[in-house]
Length: 227
View: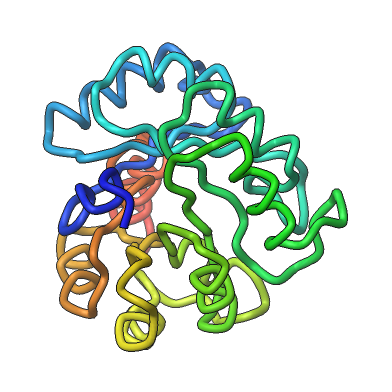
C-alpha cells in the first residue's frame, strides 16, 4: 500500500466544494475552508477544479485529493484522461476519478486511463465507485483507494438515507487489503460516520455536512417551517 494511502487509515477526509453560482464558489474561499477543516482534524481534503486544487494545496499540509467535475450528465468526476492529467499537473497528491463501468467521454476504459496516468503519476489513485462490481474492477486494476462516492447517484444502486452501509459491509469483506475502502456519500452526521467505520470503512469522507452552509441552512429552515 502506498505510504500516503496507509496514513489515511481510520481518518476523516473532508470534501471542500461549492457548486457553480453559489456565493462560496471561489478557490480562495475553498482554500480557507480546507485550512479550517485541517485545524479540526481532517487528515486529507478533496478539492474540485484546477484552481481550487492549486490554492488548497498552498493552504494545507495534508494530502489533497484532486478531482475535476465536468459536464452535466453521465461520467462527471475527472471524466477523461486529459482531465486526470490536468488534476495531477495542478498539484493533487491523490488523483480521484470516476470508477464506474459507464462509458467515458473520451471512449477510454478505466484500465486504459489508469495505465496512461501511471506513466506520469506515482501517487495514489482513488476510484469513485457505485457498486460492488465497479469497486472490484477498480481494485483489480490497482486503484489504491476505492470510495463508495457514487453509490445511489447512478442506476447501479438505490439511493439510501445516509451512507450505503450495506455496500460498505459487502466491500469490507471482499476487497483486497491493498485497496483502502473509503465511505463517501450522504454521510450527514457524526453517527453516520461512526456507522460507516463500524461497517468496515477504513476512512470516511464528509462533504456537505461540514463544508456546505447553504444545504445546512436548508435543513434547519425546513425543520422549523414545515409541519
